[in-house]
Image (spheres, rainbow, N blue to C red):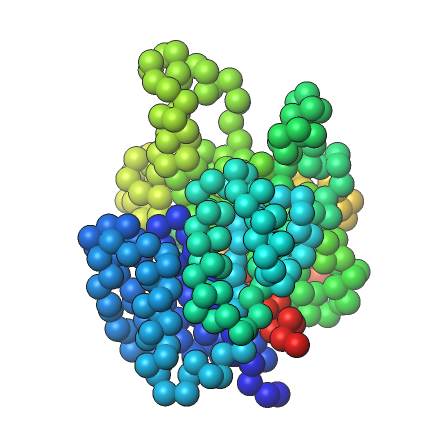
Length: 396
Ligand code: ADP
């Protein structure tokens, strides 16, 4: 297979993750991160063959970080000329994008129209796109959306029981996220199950700092736990997931605070962090729980219980289940959470293979259920490779 290098860019609100990936082999030539943008601690970290170089980029914004990255790339002999496409992760595509798309001026205008749906992420995504187009004007640039995969959801799954006009005039509906990961995992799961993807019925749990679950049939999203924003659904690292919407008003009145502060509580001080009181990091909480820290034990119980309930509910749109798949940092590494969840889902016919469950950590993929029972799988996700492959598909 001939080499096809793609620069993959993922602009967060104050960070930029990047990689140069061979979309044919999946090999990463270079990878890294620009973090703490807009601050005096802003820095660009570039890793090549495991060797890390750190560049100080005081007060840099996304454009400055990208320009520094481009300078680093140009400083590596012959590398820049080998890059044949740029792939951009874009969080929200609204209802406009059902698939990855080549970025044109018209696409940029459309992205501006959906900026209000993801005010923290989409403006940063757009800044990255504009800076990278300036730096690589002759290369094709592709936008790969977190939401696109879920555009196949039927109306009954994406409409909230609110006044319908709020959907029509203000876009208030469920969109779903982590779509790039679901697309990758669905294909991989079909291979592991030895079935054509078109015949598969999967529930996939992507459990990272943000966590979601999706029902995927024949490679298409039928329903998912995240909604209008990436807060709905299961418990996250610092976000609360689904709660009674009237809690907002109650907190405003009871604590005499404004909606922004309530938002801060529900997005940054809740989830595993709020429950445990010590960390949003699942590893830290597992360690504390093992030492009888009761709030950490409660955090793991709430997390697993709510997750099991969400998984069970997402079997409804499928009507059957070929496999439950775990992915994301927690899904790929926490044998404890997986065991707790599967224990509560035995009625689905999944029988845990404890030895296999302990084996599937740190990048090991495989079946963690007993032969003959409904399958449970662990599959490490690879969103960067998906973005690289989508971008490579647009090389003329
Ligand atoms: P992001 O959503 O930021 O991409 P990740 O997919 O990297 O996040 O997942 C981060 C989560 O994975 C953290 O909660 C971290 O504690 C958890 N995690 C990573 N390794 C382990 C492990 N060995 N055991 C339990 N949780 C783990």
